[in-house]
Image 1 (tube, rainbow, N blue to C red):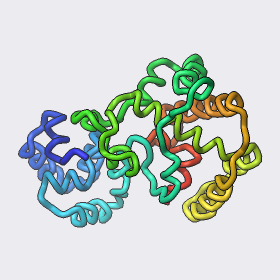
Image 2 (tube, one colour; image 1 turned 180 degrees about the vertical axis):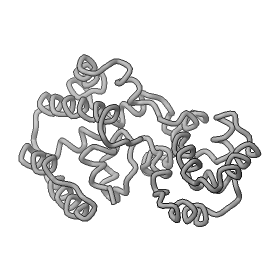
Image 3 (cartoon, helix red, strand yellow; image 1 turned 30 degrees about the horizontal axis):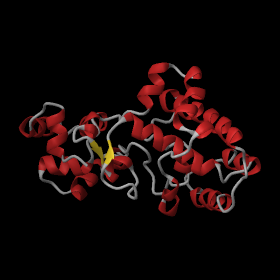
Image 4 (cartoon, rainbow, N blue to C red; image 1 turned 120 degrees about the vertical axis):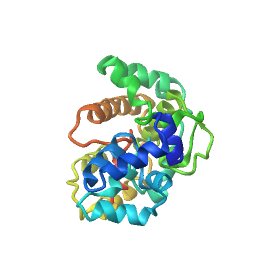
Length: 246
């Protein structure tokens, strides 16, 4: 992931200017917090810039009732701890009805063009500066450090992951997972439900799976742009993303 200095450079701000801004607003932590959130500046970035430890910075925000975890939710794919479920995240190597191009052709007529294309771009521009997406930028580690920083990469990962997920879920399992009432105390119950459902394939035809994925993709893209929950990861609101929320 880019350092704090690199993030500032991307936004054409010097370290001196950033520190002057922080000092001028030190009694207004919400101003610093909101600015950091807007530009994808994490507590580690703030540590790079100011020289203070991430622990001190986190405590500074927490003491004012600000959840500094929000500053860490800048990842492109997923902002949750998936554990073994992360293995479901992968590129789409399918052809015909399940190819990325075919799935995109099903989704695009029902989505505003700019919403579709923008969905596969990072929220924070500094993430593409070096031409690659790192594990810290994507939110999963097993893809390595050299994923090309292109919309095509993210589009393939979006559909590939949905295929891996939905190929193992039958209609009854899907209905149960989608009807689950999430709250702060039952994430383990949901995760157990999802893990159990993934134990056996659903035996769907490629066409049925393509229709299911296209419909869910439309929902996820719509929720990303217009839903009540503000997220940065394109799979944060998916059945997989919900399985990692703590």
